[in-house]
Image 1 (cartoon, rainbow, N blue to C red):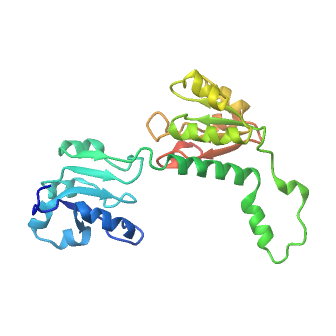
Image 2 (image 1 turned 180 degrees about the vertical axis):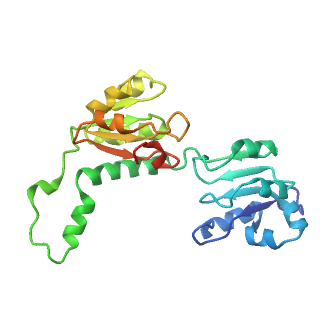
Image 3 (image 1 turned 120 degrees about the vertical axis):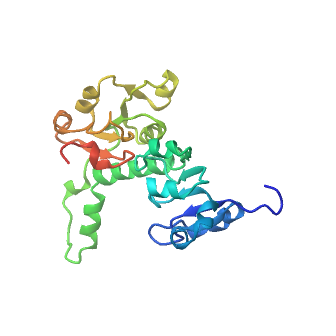
Length: 255
């Protein structure tokens, strides 16, 4: 940008609060953009709308619809702060000649950590244990409250993308047997690195796994991927952990 040239306008929902960008982001963004919040835009005259060249989405806000797109004649790009974009009408955005951007790998490690945390918490009944331990009337705890073994158990990963592979790396450290089902089989050296065994058929994975981790994007192909039939194939003692991107409840036809 040439010296003296006006910074492009960046529309954000608000600063702080439940649906606002983090205060820590403001200083960096203001080095490159003139920040405009939705309240200012709605109260402004047309000249402020013409300044907006980019939108920064945080927690799916502001809502991108036809009315907003029509009101921003110089909008060039919409940047989504997360990975999934199922909350956006991409065809509508493209019809206005606007580009889309997201952060596909920004939270892969954090998501994998969370997946393993959920698996461990479920196996070792940590939430129940916390409530028992914090109860003033607790005097003893039965031996079977320790839950089930994770070490040596079989983990079935559905969706071996970047996050699924990071989960496999973590599961290897727990000496778990790893099965996976994916549209595309991983390279042999990648399988060997984590000791993963490919299951071409999802049913084969479901009937063997002690823990099933679902790590897929929400698409028409994965919608209702796990339903009554699939859950009946699983061991009666198996645990299903769903950390899929998009609306997690849409993946299960019986939820």
